[in-house]
Length: 291
Length: 96
Image (tube, each protein chain N blue to C red):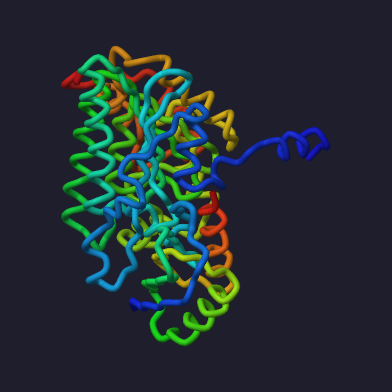
């Protein structure tokens, strides 16, 4: 590493090192941040204490309204340090309600975009079915708002975005990742425990990042922008994604293209992760339902 | 998980409420709300059986910082050093 590279590294302000509340405030315009349903409202999970787990006063989700380069926005951040960012009844409803309020405001003449900071292993196991139900509500709320205003997902790391919430990530208008971030439906350890170490070695970090990592997800078109772990770089990317507005067609609606990508993979001879982008880049005529 | 309650004499009222920390491994969350006359502390901790250590750590802290307020601590295995730092951070942010 050269001296200049070191200097640029030292000039950066890491986004990954911030907690969820600091991340939300770092993205919004100076002095505009206003937290909804904060720690002193004490809307914590009622299900953890009976199971011997210490709850957190905000249930691990931070909802902050403000403006983003002058445009009204709500930033909803998941705190990865609390229960691995796991979504429970309260935290899930906070995300869904934050998005629904933004949709209501947008319909009432106050267009409000949303930014989701997604660092989670998915549903919190202690609240299994309630967590699953709220993740469905989150997905419905993303679909409701994204028709009116952009819903920008950010997966900065270090935890990444897995489980049911990765479906919500897939529904976002735009998805921004860092090279440290990861995105996948099943996390590496889940795949290893369900399908065996021959299928996926969860201790093999280069393997995990070659499949779930931000670089690969952007290269293969499952995320949109790869950004350096730096507060101002991420803020610029988020502002740009919001500025682009609502697209004519969302990625999750391009079913024909997604199906063609799946069909392009030869399951008997699966491509190496590094070759997947090239396989998917070849135009394959969509078969059957064009979606 | 264990819930513990303590009360210590205090005569310096906190100016405003504050919130610091996270219920994450080796860390804790502190919510401080101004109150009159005493420092009331409620601890919810993931580690059972450390009542005496908690009392000692808190006694020492409130002997030095006589901040009158209600303190709610949600602990996920913080060491005494981390507990003291988070409490100091909470009273620092609660100053006018």
